[in-house]
Length: 428
Ligand SMILES: [Zn+2]
Image (cartoon, rainbow, N blue to C red; front, top):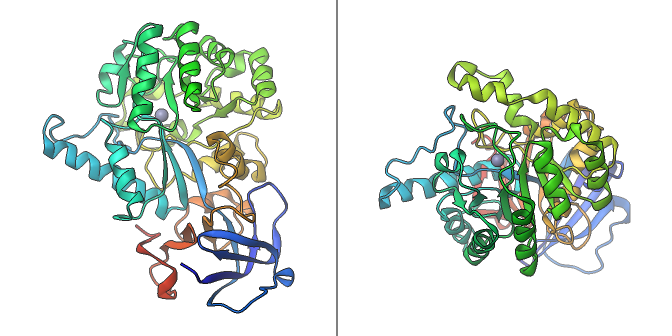
């Protein structure tokens, strides 16, 4: 890919939080950004094959990053895995295809980087290898492997997704296993869950020495820990043990000292508002009453607002895959974060440069700046005027991954050289 692609006639929202730049240009070579800024300052110094892409005043922003999804679930109302025959090759095959299809649904919606926090029987690693070999297009996948849990009802409920570990030595072993399988980070279930029928979200499942062991073991391999935690006691212990992020953080509002500590340490909050927002606004007849009652949206909104005001870094995570929370609508999480009190630009940055920082990939991803990967989302209208546009297929013009067109409106035509091998339709 030696050609130079120049995106012209765009308003650039670069993902750093800077004001949008009108009449901008972005130049890309070999999958990397070589220029981003005012069009009048762009001066290619030599002749070469150039593909000019004139977007007629549309908006170019970084491809979005979703820090919390479950590719092995598709939003089934009962929150159960639909595996035809989990112990047989056919069942494994159909789950692999489901993971791949959900991954591609994310990419077609402009989510160019997806972090899966609880896969299924390591099949997500097979899907990633297939994408990396170029057999299928798909987003960048950041994988946690199995969710490490203590022995409890939720773990039984999620067979294939969980690795049960009790005691410090078991936790260390479970961490090593995930890393051996190819995990980029560790997901630890510190408290009970809202979306598991018999779980108590406030209950702490791991002791501080176990959480500490997970953080320490992961750090040996230069990996970090994302802690699933709803209850205040579990959140407090996880932050103290040095986890990178608190996932959900439902009752964080009960501990102003912990909010302060997170702000000081730079511990991320991934509030996953959409998982509960979907439940309060969708067809509830299909979802168990106990799960709906536990999906306490008000608490999460309050916790996010207090954390945001205190300067805790926030990363976008839609929890896509949970009941009625479908892959491809992830961007709505950004809208819900704004509704909870974040400024529109800050909500967007939590899915771009700040999200990349949460992953530890901010030197390569998350903003439209020189040297970074050319992952872009192109929208017809300004997303900052209405953040729901980020998830509205009517407005998504095109998605680029590593400088190649990964998804487009079905009616748009492009030069062949810039198309990814199996370019998707944003309408899929
Ligand atoms: Zn989750």
